[in-house]
Image (cartoon, rainbow, N blue to C red; front, top):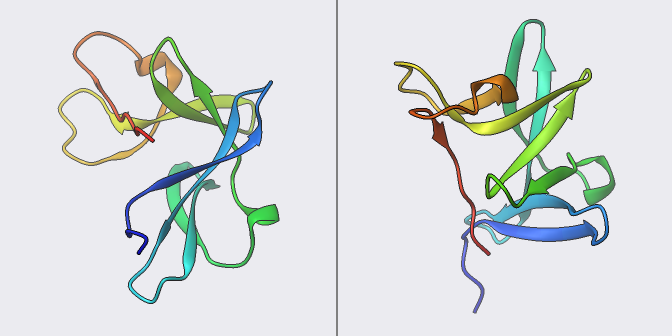
Amino acid sequence: EESTGVRVEEVDAEAKTYRIWFLDSTWSKKYICGVLNGTYKNFTIDTTNAADATVWEYDADYQTFFVTLDGVKYFMGTYGNYTTFSLCDEKYLTQGNYIAHLYW
């Protein structure tokens, strides 16, 4: 029996790119996507198909996934005194900020 945990699906091994997904309570695959919405950088859940889902790049140095939106690289995490989890500009990859690590 499969779990509902987060999974990583390889897109291109050489480029180290992946799609990130999970199974919901009805065992349907849901992709985690990164999108721009005005000045906001948001996570969305794409339920259509893999071809439309965000392709994430894995960075071994930071042990996290990045998505490039409008020419800017973003990581999953938070920075400063924020208590929310979001897509953060790579310029916040400094000591004291929080970077999400997904292990698969």
